Amino acid sequence: MNPPRPTAADRALEDIRDGRWASALRNADVALAEGSTEAWLPRLRGVALTNMGRLEEATGILETVAEEDPSPVILHELTAARIAGDDLLGARRAVNRAVTVDAVAAHTRRAAALLAMRNSDWAAAETELRAVVTDDQFDIEALNNLAICLVQQGRSGEGMQLMGHA
Image 1 (tube, rainbow, N blue to C red):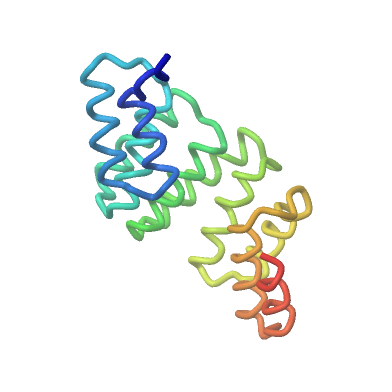
Image 2: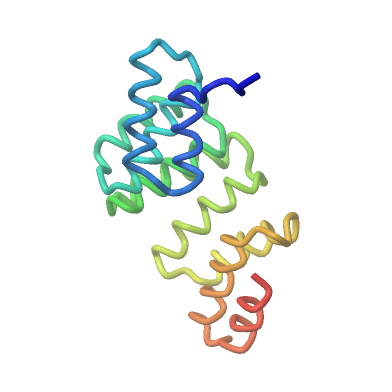
């Protein structure tokens, strides 16, 4: 018996995992047009659009998703989109909302660290990222960002050593 053919939503999810942003967006749009009710599809569209540089569309979608489900994960993605669009006030609002929802969630801490890094507040970013890697020592993104923070603070040896573990 042949395995079932992947749906457009399945293909969109695979595309996003592999960094194929345009394909992910196309497949998500097809899935939605076919009537898919997967709650994560709009969020996936926002992430794809952010990575494609279509920031106004991305932030609009992610704001709507965050209103319906203000989780730290979604607010982290909204923060990243706002920062990419150089909307630091909007990014600050997203971080504040994430803190209100769950101040110690890893995605809240990642969002706060992204904003701190964008503002060159390396010590604040380091604090947030250390909390993330304390909970998950295999979080490659957090480890790499922590290494950047250390290098920016003149602690190159420590940063390079950390990068060797990431």
